[in-house]
Every structure is written in structure tokens, then in C-alpha cells.
Amino acid sequence: MATALREIEVKYRVVEPSALIRALAARGAVFSAPIRQDDQAYAANGWTYGQSKAGAAFARLRTENGRHTFCVKRPLENELACAEHETEVLDREPMHAAILAMGFYPTTRIVKNRRTARLDDMLLCLDEVDGLGAFFEIEVMVGGDRSATEVQQELDRFARALGVELARSTETYDSLLRSALPVGS
Image 1 (cartoon, helix red, strand yellow):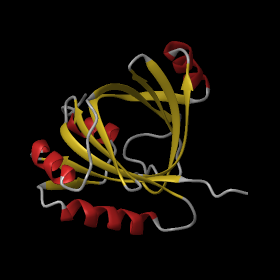
Image 2: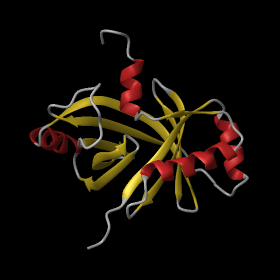
Image 3: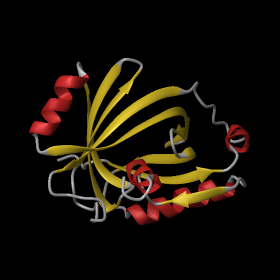
């Protein structure tokens, strides 16, 4: 039986995106043009913000350039280390209805402009998230039983070696957006 892959990432708030782009270009990374992503996040009925995400299932419905994808993630060791399953869907509205029928409820809408680059086995994402600002993500797909924390430490060392001002975040965009809402919203 093949070992399941896990998506493991680190995320940073970026002070000066142009400095980050220059630092990565010096290492051979070339970013794509920005692509607008419109994501609706979902949580399983019974889960609420403030509870641990580890072991819970979360869904996402993304539209990008008229193409729709459905994804289910299950955080393992932490929010940024997930078992992930993703597929393209033909129509967003019937998929939204199906997600609700599967026992999920909509949580947060995340809209961003994303630029991507590849460097070795890393997917580099520079995001301008509506309502939050600029973020840098480094993602890798990992098989086997390697510790997510160990992988995240390696990715963090790479990010710190770039020599640009970055503030690490251990939260997902939906949690960050929820935290940015005015009290009582």
C-alpha cells in the first residue's frame, strides 16, 4: 500500500513583498503572474472556532480562472500539516450544496491574489489576502512518518536564510480572518 502524502507548510506575514521576490529570484525562483482565488472554507458540523483543528475535517471550495476545485483537509500534528484530498468539480453551486449535505457548514470566505514559484521540492506562494495583507507560504508534500514539526523547522530555516523581514504565523487564513473581525461579528 502506498504511503499517503501530507501537505506540510509554513506561513509568514510579509513586510516587503518586493524584497522577498528579489531574495527568491537570487535562488532561481521565478514567480507566476497573480491569479485571483476565491475560497469558501467549511468546517464539519460540531466543530467551532476555539476548538483544536487537529484530527477534524475541513473542506474548501475554490474558484480560480473559472475553474472550481473541492478539497478536504485533515490537520494532523498542527493546522499547517494536513492529509489532503483535492479534485476539480464542474459547478460551484451544486458542489456547495453537496458539501452542506455532507455535514459541513460555511465558515469564512478567503479571497486572495496568489503568485507561485517552484524551488526544488517546495511550492512557494506569495499571497495578497483581502483584509489581511501579504503572506508567504512554503509548502512541501511529504510521505512516510517524518515529523511535520521537523519539516516545518527545515522550511523555517530556509525562510529565515532569505534575509527578509518575515513574521511567522501558525494559523490558517480562515482563522486569521476570523481573528481580524471586529468583536461581536
